[in-house]
Image (cartoon, rainbow, N blue to C red; front, side):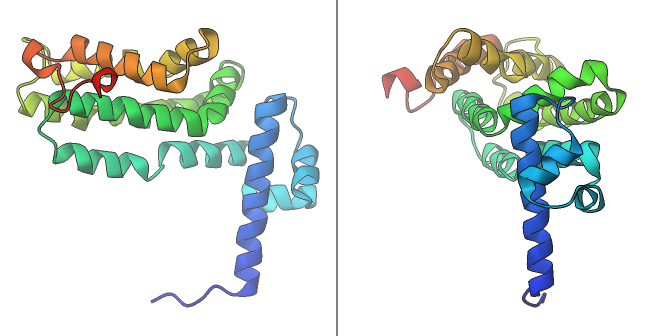
Length: 215
């Protein structure tokens, strides 16, 4: 059993977290390219050399932010819940709710990566990794729906993944919330309802507890 962290270890963790938080704030506010390591160091109240030593500079920090987003524990928790569910519409609406939660928590990281990737090969590689992890989430969800015989006639698991990506990939919440000014709640409800229609046999499109609009 691991012992209690030493003061040195606690300080190191706090320092690293301060650097990561500073980078996230500045990347979102100024953009990746306009943010210098010196700016991050000043925001975190450390020396620039510490940013490189502890976090690997700007690229290492963006990698850390990407991993924090794509490896969030909520992903594994959600998949465990879905494996135990037998309500197809409830599964799709849970995906809508979790995607909303992830978007509210990490939209700033997504935006930085999406806007930077076309201009930086390393960030483009990081974004490909993030996208791969993101899409992989939809495979066990789609397989569960297929096992429940809930998908539209003739729809394969791979096609279902593509439909999930269409509704819950990068663009949907940005369009509805940022461009259209919808609340996240309204966007979640609309996307969940439309995804049910696009994915599920008619008899499976209605949650046993009713749609969000009816509860």
